Structure formats: structure tokens, C-alpha cells
View (cartoon, rainbow, N blue to C red):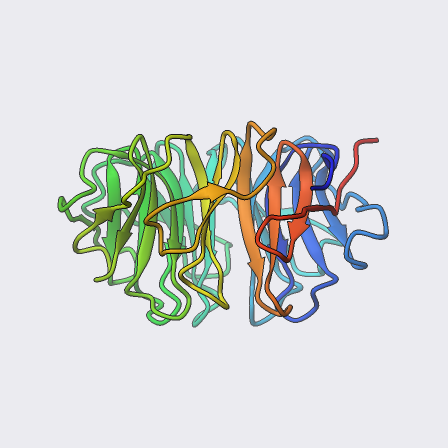
Length: 307
């Protein structure tokens, strides 16, 4: 297992075609590597804004959106060489999630803490609320269906909400996950009807029908879940980032085993790079940025380091 990688990291975003380019939200602002971490992770700015989430435009990865703790969203169109605010309509809000529509990249969604979902149809120039039917507006995360761009899932303190019309209306299905804290959602990239939800308490729940019904695992995790990730090469392998490190399931969430980093009190994000074989899993948390390509048996320090 690798040793801690320095400053705490809350967000990790991977370039869609070049696995040497990685962006992270860290104590030093928004850091970027173009050499897989070998260049020391220079900061690109936003040092005082606590970057919490990062989303790339998959059609044009030079365009990024960064959600901050209390200053809305910032945007770059030149691969982080410069930044400008993109928060008209949501200034001074805590942003917990950003989705750039994979089908229409000018359409963007933002999950906020206390004001629900905001939507932009002009690439972040302006925003409006998209909260119809969303009773709990304190969002924890926001995830888009990889096959249907109008379908999104929002996790809240009171369950999972779903929209099938691009945020115009939301509904919560009470079957299994009503009035429970859902901190994370992950969708099976090979079968989007299969969804995993990380709950506190309650462990990981699984839906095989697009969120209409949910079932808990046979041996639920007792650690507090912060993030989830599904292995794109073997979707029965599900990883949970918790307040006590990373855990892995090899049976579609029925049971979990430790997968390293049990010293980490905060695992903010887990992100798979499907471009490598086998896929590489990146960790962002209390230990900085680390990665594993062997299911967590060994973690390598990637960065960024404290200065």
C-alpha cells in the first residue's frame, strides 16, 4: 500500500482520451498534471475557493467546470490556463455535484446544498432551478444515466430522486430507500438499470430496475459511506469509499471486504480510468491522490504533495 500523498483531495477528474492528464481539487486549489503526476501537480488557480467537484466536457475536454464550497461554479475553456465565474443565478452556493450532459454539452446540471438542482442550457452562462417535485433540496450527489441523457438521479438526506425529463420533474420511489440518508450513487456502465446507492446507516443498496425497487446487501457495511464506484471491466466489483478507507465487493454489493487505506478517515471520491487494462481506480481523500490497478491490494501515491 502506498503512503499518504500529501494534501487532502476532494475531487478527481480524468481526461477522456489522455490518461496522463488529471485534474484534482486540493488544498492548493485546482491542480493539474499532464504527466500522470510526475510533474509535481502545479496549481492552475482557485486556491482560495476550495474546489469540491470537477466536471469535464467530454466533447471538448479543454472545457471544465469546477464547483466550490461557497462561491458557485468556475469555468475554463483552455484546459485550466485561465478561469472565470460561471455562476449567474447560483452565486455563493455550495456546489456538491456537476453533470455536463454527454449528449448536449451546453446543458449542465448543478447539485447544491440547500437549493436543490440548477440547470444551464447555455454552457454555464446562466442558471435556473430545476426542482419540480424535489422535496429535499439538500443534495449529496447527482449522476446521469449513460444511455438516456434526460435521466438523472439525485441523492439526498431523504432518499433517491429521479428525473426522466431533464430536471423538469423529479420523483422519489419509496420502495426501499425512502427517508434515508443517501450519500452516493453509482451506475453500472454496462447496464444502466443497475444502480448502487450508498446509505448511512444501511450500507450499499442495489436496484436492478432503474431505481423502482431496492435491496440491501447480505452483509451491509457499517462504515459511513462517502462515495461509490463500479469497475467498468467487471461490474460485479463495486468499491465503497468510507470514513475508514476503501472496501470492495466482488458479488454486486452483497458483501464487502477491505481494499486498503483503512487509515483514511475521509474518502471523498473514487474514479475509474477505463482506458487502462485493467482499469485503474483513483482515490481522492485525506491521503491526497492514490491509485490501484489490482483491486486495492497495493496503492501508489500519485499526488499532489503538500508544499
